[in-house]
Length: 148
Image (cartoon, rainbow, N blue to C red):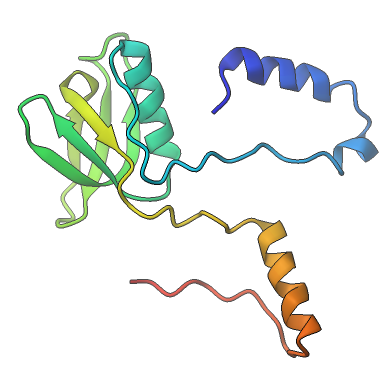
């Protein structure tokens, strides 16, 4: 994921293009975080990793400093002035009770679940559409993914 400075520079570059040129510029690249175990040695690394976990569309596993593990979907975060004042909210995969975890309690983080949004870009759909059309299929449409 890009830093704030990289994002700022990209926005400045985009301001130099006309609306017609912007229609054909490639979008922001999505990181493949599935299976990633980030280094969280500093406060900044903890904040960055948990921010990426919030954007991730799969389950993560949080190991707390007391050794307990929490696997589930990170659906909310509250960033405070310090790590003790910052929290993530997780829906555990084996329970529907929402759990709060302070950033200061996080010892390790792993992106353990399948990224349900991976490969779901419009460009991927168009590629599949043309492959089906070339194969002679009719009534080609977008179908929702089956839930597990």
